Length: 203
Image 1: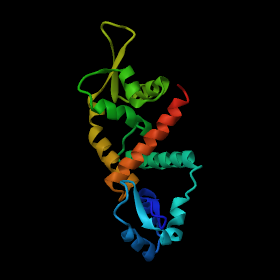
Image 2: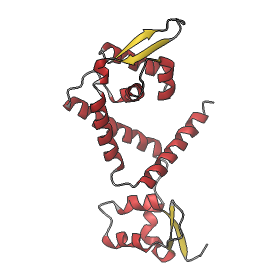
Image 3: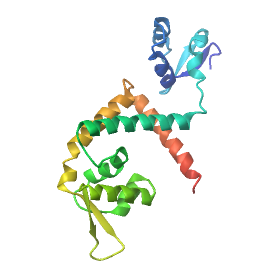
Image 4: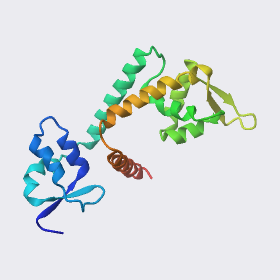
């Protein structure tokens, strides 16, 4: 590695230069990267290190709180869109169940919904019960095994699909902004790793 150059994470730097406080000269620096960086990093002349230092020393200790705030803001966006569309009985958490059921052409075991949602059984069962009370899904007994219960969307539930897709598209557009596809994939991989790290605690 050339001692006169430093490695800079492109995701962090792109986030930094998109802030209102970033000046034109700092944005111009983005065009000065040497082309031999990796997919997620650029190599930049060391003389520019003071300019970009702030985006390399972000506080990483508040990540759990940051994720919680992101989820809260996303849920507020979904809830507002549901209200404006006069959709009753649906909350943001139901998206996990509805998304899976929209993909199904026949009734599926509740166990399959739980496994797909990757949430505890009692939480998913409560979601399904509420959706059933509002007429969006119906539960069906298994003819050969009374321990198994199937679930499927009703016609009323199927009619949610268009609104569901529109709200999902709006949410993702708001979440990612002008982030390019490479950065989106990089972010998704990091979040997947965080989730795996936490799940490992319970194994």
